[in-house]
Every structure is written in C-alpha cells, then in structure tokens.
Length: 184
Image (cartoon, rainbow, N blue to C red; front, side):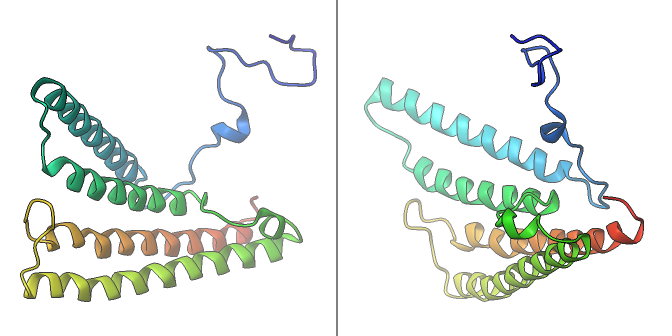
C-alpha cells in the first residue's frame, strides 16, 4: 500500500472507488434501476438453472433438456438489457480518440450523432423483429429444444430493442441540454 503523499490514489479493500469509476449516473426520467434489476434477476436465473443442471447431471447422469435452450435465451436477453443500460449511461462502444477530442461543440455533435445512429439502428431492429415475431406466431413455430412457441423467445427482441432506442433518444436529449446549461 502506498502513502497518501505519493502520486497515485490509495486504494485498499475498504476505500471507495476512484472518482472516474465511481461517477454517478446522470439523472434520467425512466430509472436505470430497471435494467440493473433485470440484470440481477437474469444472472440469478442463469446461475440457478446451471447449478440445478450440474447437480442433476452429477446425481443422475442425465440433464434437464430445457436448460441449454433457456440459458441461451437468457444470455441473449442479458446482453440486450446490458446494452440498454450501456446506452443510457453513455458507456457504449466508440472510438474515444474521435469522440473525446476537439472542441466541446464537436464532442456534443458527435455524441448526439452517435445517439441518433444507435436509436435508428435499434428502431429498425425492433420493426424488423416484429415481423419475425408475427411469423413465429402465425406459423406456430416451436423452439427446437423443448417445443414451446418460438414467439415466447422472439417477442423480447422488439421490446428490448425499442427500450435501447428510447434510451438512445433520451441520451440525445440529455447531450443537447448539457451544453445549454454550461455544464460539462
């Protein structure tokens, strides 16, 4: 452990996170706790399903047939929910060399451009996936593993894609206000 007089911050198990990591979420109209709790619930379900399958395999030399299909669905849903949280927190992937360089006006325009592109992409995905869900429902498609209606899984793609697009719209609005208030 280093002393407080040295150049680096002093971190131990009891110290708070550094300010760049500890940054508080921006105020948003729809609470970010929705994505946070959805992530916790999905991760908990994944852990329980996997644990139950391991125990059953160990005890009986057989496994639950539905666990792989349901786990894959949950992992995809988890990635989408985490994507929504990343967009809302402005933590999505970008090339920071371009997005964090230049004047404040340029940074604002790039941030807003990125938000518009994310919103457009996910509104497009939501629209196209609605057609897929309708086809799954209309043609009574069933899942390959356990034979449940496929639309039970596919309905979540347009829902979460719309949520991501709306989070990107909110980010666009917040980035537009950021400069007007003189904050940064």
